Amino acid sequence: MPVQLEFLNAATGEPKTSRAEANPIFRDEELLDAYSRAVSHVAEHVSPAVVKIEAHQASRGRGRGPGGSGSGFVFTPDGFILTNSHVVHNAAALQAQLPDGRRLQADLVGEDADTDLAVLRIDSTGLSSVALGDSQKLKVGQLAIAIGNPYGFQCTVTAGVISALGRTLRSQSGRLIDDVLQTDAALNPGNSGGPLLNSQGQVIGVNTATILPAQGLCFAIAVNTAKFVAGRLIRDGRIRRQYIGVQAQTAPVHRALIRFHGLPVEVGALVVAVEENSPAQRAGLLAGDLIVAMAGHPVGGVDALHRVLSEENAQLDSITLIRGTEKRTVAIKPQDRPTES
Image (cartoon, rainbow, N blue to C red; front, side, top):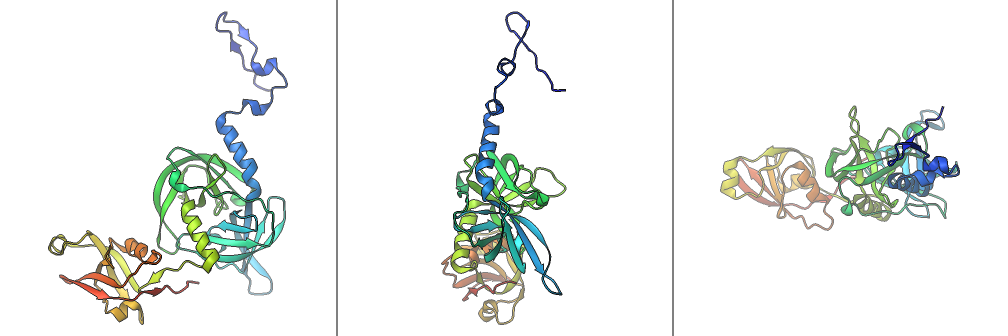
């Protein structure tokens, strides 16, 4: 039985007829508040650009083996799709299922495990696409809308707010992803690679991870990171990062050494091992060296070293390290990092 609402007349205390009862043709959309209208508008206009990604693994026999699935979104009318690297990594074949039911072969343009992003391409034109926003303009508390395919339920819409900005998240490659967005918009397996949107229907992030068993702790790669990575993947097929060939861990610098040498950091990157025939070996680095700077850039730990090596067009020609109690600066010539399978 439908619930009947009774409103009292403020003057007489007698029941008065609600507006909906007085006007039986009063439409549901007129009852929607601004929040609901924003979510409904975004869902209506963006859902046609959200696709289900099916990743098939190679089987031992003939044909395709079982695989996983995730989400993605078309960001150009000629078929470029953004998704997560972990959705498509090592797939033997990829398919994109459009909301209209079409299944199209998807080709991997490139992926970057360090930011958990990948670009695919489908052979079609005139596709619905979604606009990319600006994550630098975001504020904590503003509306965030997620669209994806959790557990295969296509074009599922959830909404929440931006819970925090500037988080860091450890990628599957082991490197930190900077400038990650935190949201309480519900994400589940299958949402990976789908868009996180603002109230104007612009992509502000690429949904990537949740923390289990916590509720409301979900994360998305900021769209400004995604725009940079997508551009490089389309241009080069991969992100070029420099490589020196050390295994390292973050370690503190003794306070006496900080004061004596006037070091700009309190922690550095402690070299645990040096790879054979690497730039580090040729430069004379040894296990036990503590890297504190590179070409004048302070290195406050392993993640800071990764960031320095990722800077495009950075002229990295020297490393400053502490060996024992001695401060040394040695010449080094980094090279492009080998492509990981």
